[in-house]
Length: 313
Ligand SMILES: [Zn+2]
Ligand SMILES: [Zn+2]
Image (cartoon, rainbow, N blue to C red; front, side, top):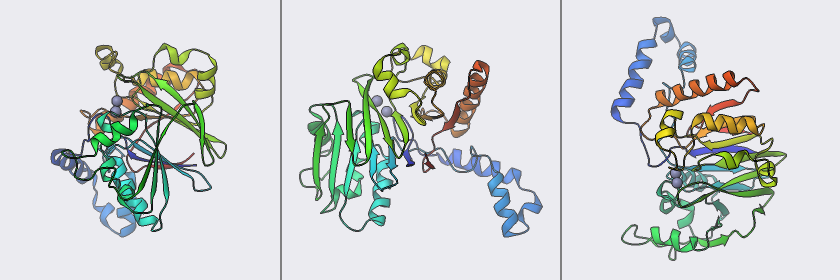
């Protein structure tokens, strides 16, 4: 399956500031040698050597993930501000009406704020199906998309909109099998394990991983064990977490512990703290890698989820 991050930031959209952009440009200029400018090739080579923390950005849009199976079945999870760019891309790609499936983890602002700007919602002939276990989630979503907050209501949006209240933890959408799991977060949130083409991805944002997720019960076994990729809330350093226990987010050390405990190969830190610059987030990964090798039980590949990043699972 293909996976793409459209929004990775937690809590609030966080665009690069002019100061941060200037610092990145200055860091690039500092590295240039005369030989790097000799030809198109040497310039490309130079650009490819620039560290990720300097070249581009981790991204400022809030939570939105896209998964696509080999057969072309598409799942979207969460409607943070990242869904706006996804909607525009889909509209360019598919000119004919289509059906879009959007799974919701919960309804904090950073997970719904992009929805009014999801272009396919406003286009006649499209069918948009939302999924959540929350009984009144239709009202919750409609309430944020009405005057005085937004000029167009969901009822007059041109697409056909449906709301599916999930009653079971296991369900299918096209060729995807999905397992849903309730997580610890103020007001509650759910995580999804999406499996297709012999691979599986867990999307577990806005969750405070703690002892219940390490218990070897039947649901944990089915949900976590041997998953190929986990995209996991890792908003805090361990030190911050001590001050922010019960705020509903996970420390990076705990994220590594969880991936190790359940033999999960690839761990993507997600829901990045808005106060941190790209450099600081990459430094946190270094410290998590150190922790990983210090534990020495097995290696978990640790990645930083970056906006626009695509991978084949
Ligand atoms: Zn959030
Ligand atoms: Zn939240």
